[in-house]
Image 1 (cartoon, rainbow, N blue to C red):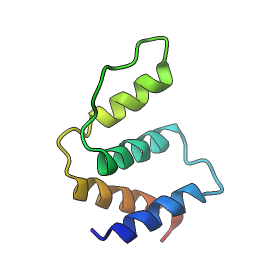
Image 2 (image 1 turned 30 degrees about the vertical axis):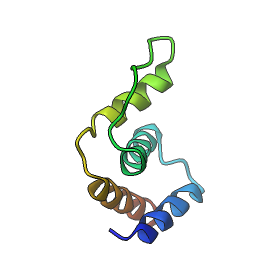
Image 3 (image 1 turned 90 degrees about the vertical axis):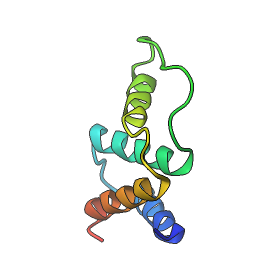
Length: 84
């Protein structure tokens, strides 16, 4: 997957006028982190941080996914949202 295609998808998602919803935003967050950082590292946030915990869990669910696959999945999800 060309890095430029991924970069364009990231910009397209950032420019969305409508909120895609929490589940979609979590999936995009997890795919972005998996594509740019790799597998999640560090401790899972505690129950007093439900947003951080949800983000951690979404990212951790993608453990083992390659950078290329995470980028491709992000581009596909962005295309679905933007109609591109």
